[in-house]
Length: 286
Image (cartoon, rainbow, N blue to C red; front, side, top):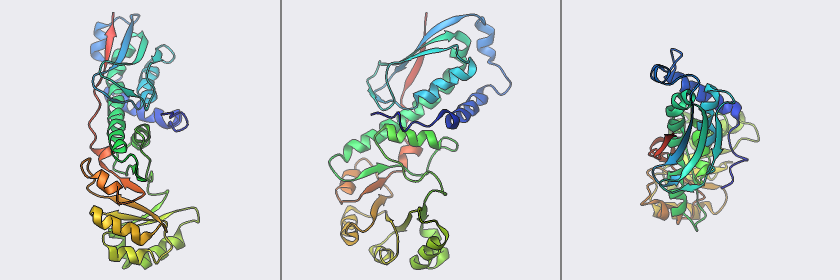
């Protein structure tokens, strides 16, 4: 996958990596490394996959070393974001100050393993819905502070992004409807408040609610916790007038049936809040 046009810019990523480094360096130094490793010692290291999966987040992970020793750590990337690696594959090679390599190791791996795990989980679901019209998308169930990177990892895995925040689209959910009193009233208020470029989506739990929503000027419906049979009926009711999104309780065992109902999107919170980290390691080479 060519991710070059979709990678978060350094101005976005650097504050996240700095914050991660500061968790380890709150008092300014690495006691273990500084005591054991001479300041002038150089070293080579290899980032290697210890399990098969999809790589994501290399730029962010390697930035940890550049922040610790600006311009001093040379890196050779062997596998690009979005690529599949087998166990034992070399992902990147590094050479530079040994202290920087050891001090930045955990921050680098925390980011790379987390983001690669998300990409790997995404690719698994994307493969399961291959041949259908459905696109796998993420949600806002992300790690605080890491949303831009985690959503990037979803893209590396072949998925797509739902809204990034509360400010880029209107999603009218059950609690909004409870306070507004009806779908009609909620949509009317949203239309009056949002600009013409903002899309409006309404969450519905039943086909009756769906019929009500389709009478309003909306762009998408979120079909919450519906069975594949209910989803098929919902898609028939919509008949292409708005985007259809299935959500709630999506699992690898059920996602194919959901996709075959004809929905446009399948949103899966698990991708960014429950995907296991991919096992990668950094090994010093003498």
